[in-house]
Every structure is written in C-alpha cells, then in structure tokens.
Image 1 (cartoon, one colour):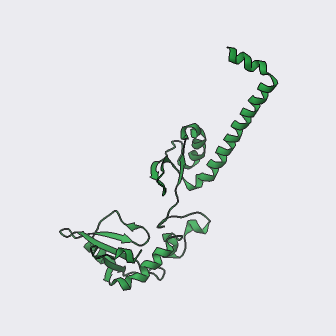
Image 2 (cartoon, rainbow, N blue to C red):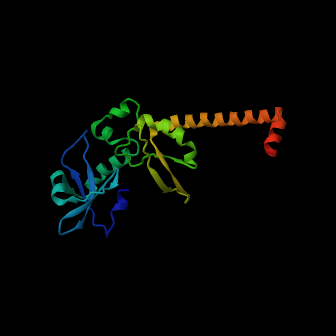
Image 3 (cartoon, one colour):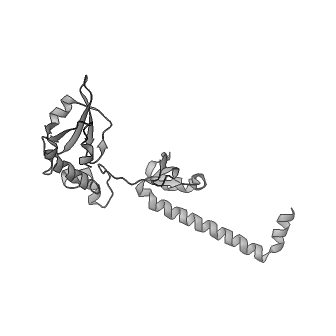
Length: 202
C-alpha cells in the first residue's frame, strides 16, 4: 500500500503530525491539485483518499513535510492496525463501544455491510417490526446497488449490524409459520378431498 502510492507521475509529499497521541504520529500523503488556491488531496493510511480538499495553510499547521522513509513506519503502523482496530482504540488506547463488546467501525479501512436482497416487499412487515425500535416510527432504509467480485449485480437494503440477528430470527420464525400453515392445509386436503374437489369445481 505504501509503496504503491509512490509513483513518478504522482509527486507525493509525505507529512507527519507535530502532535503525538498514544505514542503515535499521523502520517498522510498529499498531492497539490490546485496550484493557484494551493489546495491538496489528502490520503490517509486507514481511510484512503479524503473527500475534502485541504489548504496548504491548514496542512502546515498540523503536519511537517518529511521524506517517505521517515513517514513509512507511521503509515504502515496505522494501515495494519486499521484492519481490525477503530480510530478510538488506535489513538486513545481504548474505545467505549469496544470495551462493552460492541462493534466500532470508525476509521477502519474495511467495513462490513449487511444487505437484504430478493423479494423484500414480501417481508416488509417483519422488517418494520425489527427496525422500528432502532429507527423510530418512520422506518428509513438505504437502498444500495453493488457488484460482487464475481461480477454479480445486487440491489438491496442496508440492514444495521445490530438488527441482523433479530431479523434473521424473525424471518426464520415467519418462514416456519408459513410452512406449518401449508402442512396444515395439505393435511386437511388429505382428510377431506371432497372440499378440494368442490373448490376446483367452483
């Protein structure tokens, strides 16, 4: 990751922070994209390219320009840690959510999204029942379109991580109820075949 960003046509400038947090410094990679306004693209080791452009003045306040060799260790440390450790734990040494067993994905370079696909409308009532306690009476869901590594296109709804297990349980229970209803209907038809014949004739 570090070496792949060092390209002849990229003209990178590595900087490390003046401040140290949890015995660590921040390393960033910047590239000037507007020489007139002195605006820079900023790349971070954990979250990659940032959306917001930074001014030279703002960067200079927090960071000092260094050689790539001097930034490498700081960059590599954060890049490797951000696979599993959130920004809170990395910079502060602990995370409130992680300390109570909850998942915190702030600052992770890899995030997990749960997408419900298929005939979503057929299970909308179950979906509302699970999401309502989390999002309130007006259930709002985000629709996403994505493509898998093997090229398959998927359209679905993003399900919050804390709703995944309850939703699976709800759908399994609903499916079992439907299966039982079908089995009961089949039993009735076997016991009373004339009722089925009557229905077919009408």
